[in-house]
Length: 337
Image (cartoon, rainbow, N blue to C red):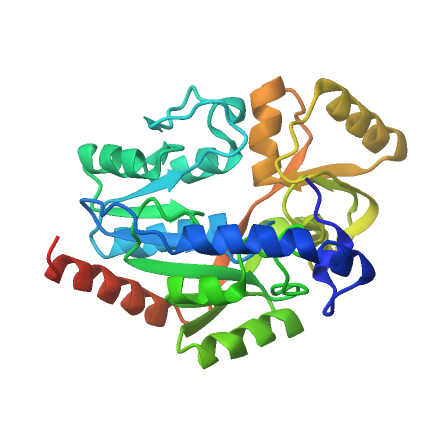
C-alpha cells in the first residue's frame, strides 16, 4: 500500500480524526499483543525494527549491523518474515529463490550473510541455530512478541519521524508509542529533520540510547549521475527518499514514478517505463530493492541499460553502536538461558 499523505503531517488532520475510533481499537489490540512474552532463542537476537509502517532504512541498518558482528568474530544470520514472498518457511534463502518466493529484502540480506525467512519467528531462530549462526538479526519484528529480543534498535526516518503520532489507520504507528518504548533499547535516526529530532528527544526522555546515520550511494556512481537526465522509479516505503538522493547526486529528474511499497512489477509496467525513458532520451534508474523484484520477473539481463542505485548506511558513531550491541549480546550470554 502507499502511505496516505495525512499520516506524515505534524498534527492530526480531518481524515486522521475521522479514523481515530478505528485507530483506538487497533492500537489497543497491538499494544496488548506487544506485552505478551515470547520464546527464548538459543542464540542472541538483535532486532532491527521501526515504530511505523513504511520504510525507514531497516534493511541497510541490518546489513550494517551484520558487518559489525562479522568484524567482531560472530557468525550472524538474518531472520525475515519474507513479506511479498509465497514461502512461509522456515527456509534458508538460496540463489535460485526469487522475490516472489521469499520477498525482496531477504534477497538483499542473503548477499551479506545467511538469511532465513519464516512466518513463525521462533522456528526461524531454531533453523539459524542449526546452520551455525551465533547471532540472529531480525529484519523487522519489533511489534512481534513471539521471539524474545536481546537488543532492539528502532530505525527512524529523520524527515518523517513518527508522523502524526497516531496508530493505524489514522496514522503510521504500528502500535501506540507508550506500548513501543518499553520494547526498545535504542533509536537510530537516519537522515536529518524535525521528525527525527522530535523522536530523539522522546527517546532521551525514556532513557534510550540514540544513534544517527545517513544513507548515501557510492561516490563513483554518484559522480556518474551528475547532470544526467533520468526517469526514476521506486516501489519502496518512501520513494521520495530515493528521489531526494538522486537530486543530491546532481541527477536531473525529468520523470518520477512512485509505486506502492513492495510493488509486484508486471511486464506491462516495465515495458511502459522503458518506452517512456527511450522516447524522451532519459536514463531509467531504480533502487536495489526494486531491481531484485524486476530481475525475478524478467531476468537480470532483460533491461540491460537500467541503472540501479545502491545505498549504504554511514553511521555517525559506529564504535558507539558496535559497543552497545556487543554489550547486549555479552549480557545475554552471561545470563541464564
